[in-house]
Length: 406
Picture 1 (tube, one colour):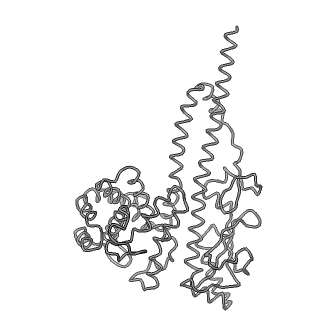
Picture 2 (cartoon, rainbow, N blue to C red):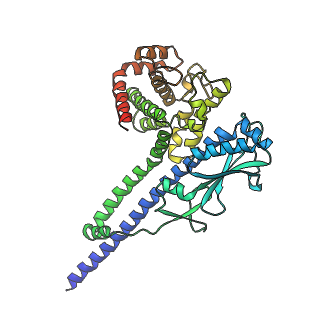
Picture 3 (cartoon, one colour):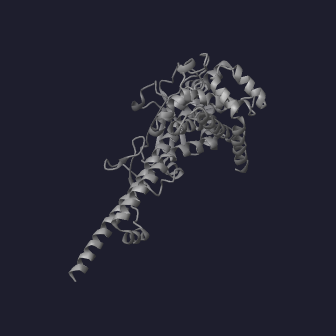
């Protein structure tokens, strides 16, 4: 009888430990999901704000309209912005509030007064950021419910105003909604015991961490795809070419993964470039080209805001530098350009040359490679491209077939 009681006591103890383990594993899973979604949510708000700021509020026409009080021009453009950005449910010109007195800032994101929205405040500049409207700014309100629903967070968190909550983004706090410990988890706990629980917990925690580290990246690529399918296929092609080149040139493991991620996001800064410049048929004028060249800097700033994407910053920032110093944004030469950025530059130029663009037709492979041999690119990498052209074409054809099926 005594032995039976000991067995029962040990079994109950193991069951309690197992259930507690499952509880905290469940909590860790929810917490990891929130953390990854927070990063994607924060970056999507920054992207939206950057796009509106660069597209409308750094624009001499809008600046002049606000100065003159041209209500029709202002209203037409506000309607365009509301139509192109479903998350924004209202936008208006307001008197400059005391909390937004810094006229050097492009915008400021704060919680709304009602607690159910985020407010984005924009300064209004001319084209070259030399002049700003002193007494007026733009206020845009974004529905928190719609924003959380877009990232599948509505069923997971609740926005709270108490200091007891955990920080979300832009001054908002949250708490996890109560979640049940499901019956099958309890049954599993009863059956597997303490040791099995520890093993499973360790394995699953590792898998959860690995999975959710990639969620923010996948969300960014998805945002990019929704904006322009042609550009999205270009990014995937460049990533595939860069990986093949990287392997051939001895790049391994983490650096190869870093190169692939940087290639997928190398043009993410174009979200901040006005649509009219991206889609223009013909050569850009000096002002348009000046704005277009900012996309690598914008992209570097955006990925720098996400902790696990910060390593991509230098690759994205320098992927338009040229070995003779004629590139941008800093005119670096030769080995001063990071090696991964030089690989990305070759992959980017090659896919651009063999693809149709609004302003020209695609080149054939032979002419594209001949053209690249004349360019100020790293010719060792160009040579690796020539030697691996068959493998590259196989991957590019697969990407094209996948895009067609979509």
